[in-house]
Image (tube, rainbow, N blue to C red):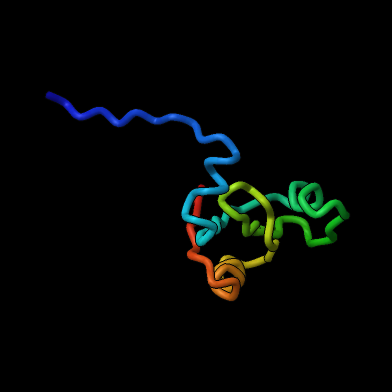
Length: 85
């Protein structure tokens, strides 16, 4: 018998409950997406890599220009960082 992993997409409510509100994910984003997330233009040098820190449900907490800064922000909020790619 073979064990099969069945993946079911989570809805936003299920994502919000994921980790009991104790985790946040970090993912690289482009400046245009960062502008959309915060609702204001972001002025950075061409090629700058940004990182979004978000609750499990996708609510943005912070945007930084370094992975270390993103991790520090998560830890500052007493959350567990999860990196997604």
